[in-house]
Image 1 (spheres, helix red, strand yellow):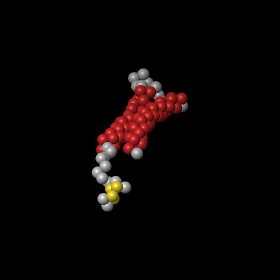
Image 2: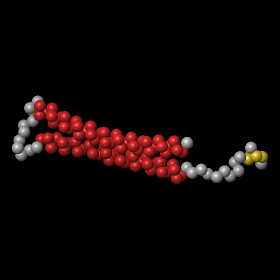
Image 3: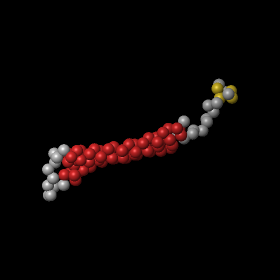
Length: 104
């Protein structure tokens, strides 16, 4: 039972890392597609001294907190796995197989 909890926590840590990366990628691709849509509809006025694509891309940099959250969650899962491995050791049997002085 202990190993099931450890493996489940480690799989959850991997899933958190994967989901954090996917969230950042989705955030960046949404920012870029928004820039392309604005450019295709001629909403943006392109100037030489201002890079609109870079500015819209910097909006996507705000999605980096998803990655920090996923690292934190994965770390919590790994810490939980280590705590289960260390604290849930097999305890020695101190005569609990005896009932009222008789062997069971």
